[in-house]
Image 1 (tube, rainbow, N blue to C red):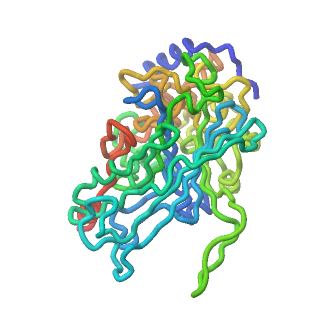
Image 2: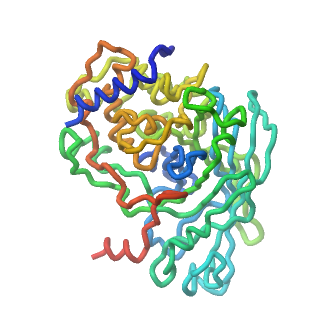
Image 3: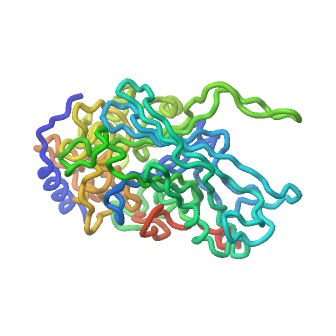
Length: 471
């Protein structure tokens, strides 16, 4: 479906700010049958934003392993040694990866005589008291327009992940441990991999009970953050902007389409697994993609159950096969059936722009091929006062122009599904007044984010959370 290119950047600002005034008064946790049974390869969220304290860089975050209970010892959560974790960047708009960062992990045990994760306080990444430790390599591969690799190199080797946040006796200075696990790579980037607080906030219990809104119309609070006090494992990169463009140069401003990238993360396993016995165990054969994530909540809420696992194994270049689900999404029909909200008629070209092509004049590449990924204009100026509603709140630096940690993607997507952005493409359409007030009543994370890389909050401590949850 063609989308008009005559919408100017200024008109987007004016229309969306107007909608906010009139209407105001998990992302991918267990989203598909097979990935729900393979938590260590399950993408939960992807974030891409211009770094607020280093505006010459972009930060990419990919989270895995949903719903980590902090007290899950003695074998605490970790990255899987047999999973290949990738962060992919399309800097052309053709639906292919042209830059790929690959992470491979290796777990070792230093104290074979104990059944414990640690035998004393862990005061450094090399602590003699730490039994289980994990290292990783990260490589960067570049591809041409035909998808053929033109260069590949390791940019960080034998890097250490921090231990999990166990409790005051085991990890007395956890923030220092995590800070020590931030590394500089040979290509000028920063990297971190390890446990963090789950930054996504959503009333999971209500939304999956047929889009229940606890306190109508949705913008008056009252929601319950179903991911509060859970952790995830994060792969984080902070990359110079010029290292992500097709030209290798930093664009002059946001009008240069070389400033637009698409980002998604994947996890892959080898096709055949050899079951362990006393002499051998392991994997063989080619890797197969088993999880994929770009935009939040797309596979969870829009892709039908019969196609969810297929989506996880597919590539963005082939996303024309999912076009129908975006043009006539089930959640929009539910909003009509349950709340009598007058949603726009199908086919929905507004949702195609939000989820598949980017918004014209903001983050849509030239000659874009519709494909599901998180699209970011890296040169959009930093917002002095970020708005949690992103573009719908008049903040052009927020979702769906990339995704920041504070962006309330649940409220944004509910309002978009109800038609809040539809006038961008159909100027005579007046959205239902309820469209601009929808939400799940959860407006922020349960913990404050850090002011610098990797930005995500300190993971919840096992002793602290178990004490709170168990009477």
